Length: 393
Ligand code: FAD
Image (tube, rainbow, N blue to C red; front, side, top):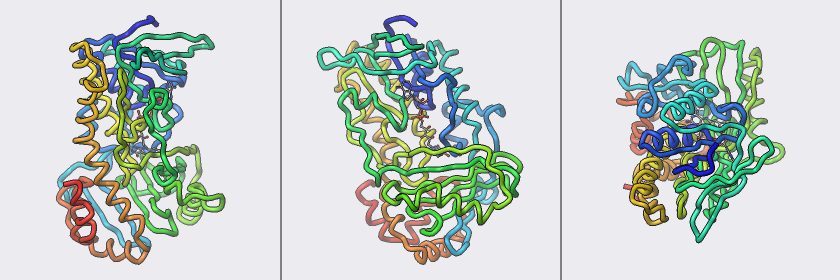
């Protein structure tokens, strides 16, 4: 490890590895650091991802694709099913990944592009001079180092500290975070071609239960509920246990995951002099689905492009890095703010309203598999939503 780089990226999740890869491809001298000794492990993810958006960043590889989905089924509290199927829609659904392998493949691509990768290396602070972030303090194998950088990219995930060290407020309230629990379950019959989503206040208040198949007789079965709905008696794991006992009594749990997903929509600030924040650290995941992999990769790529422009111009000031903020807010930001409004409507629905909504949508032939298509159908069934969304469009 040298003591000076153009760019230091903190965190080798999807956001960090894509940022490092793209910055290296632009000819920058890049260091990517990861606090864990194995990139991608432990996994905190249901591993579902859209095919089209994924391909913008990496060619699909059977080594990290666990299952290829034909469609999704959404179950309302009374069991009414909304089905979005590839053969009807003619669009593409998604993959269920093996993220342990996927995250490593992304870091591998960053390394091949020329980035230096250091694992078991934790950022412990920032080097700040004259109001500019000028590097990172690191801890590796018990030794402390300071590494200088023209730009630092904070990709340190939902528990991000790097942004806060630079004075950026990324605090989440309980209502802004989905608390999640998930089992990897085997030995039970699951339709392997479909992702399943279960709604209802009994099942998952202000959230949903998902079943994402990972091949024959194996699936991620998880739940996300708003932090504000969780208490000592009714935690996400309690709802999940009830669901699994009732619906998959023969299933065997072979892995468990707990974690949080930001569902707050776009935050005000994600830059400082010499610093950009990307992915979950910048709270860029989708408030309805909780999906954050694609947004993290998209943001990582934008940050890398802006870093290259700023370094070439010799100006890494917040004003210059505003290009990053403008670009992600015009794309990812618009989508997650739209999702936030829909979510805020959705969490107030009673089970009766959910049932009647599902009933009105059950025969809709979705013409594509996108969330926007589902939202469009939702608007038609719920005019208030359209009114609330006028602020976005
Ligand atoms: P991360 O993937 O969290 O990567 C951050 C990295 O930074 C980590 O490797 C961490 O070890 C490292 N790091 C942290 N601090 C430091 C430090 N100080 N120094 C060095 N390294 C550091 N999204 C989807 O798209 N589809 C899903 O199906 C889905 N399911 C989910 C299910 C659950 C239960 C949860 C919790 C999340 C789910 N998500 C899903 C969200 C998705 O996992 C995240 O949005 C995505 O991982 C964000 O990528 P990231 O690179 O921003 O952060």
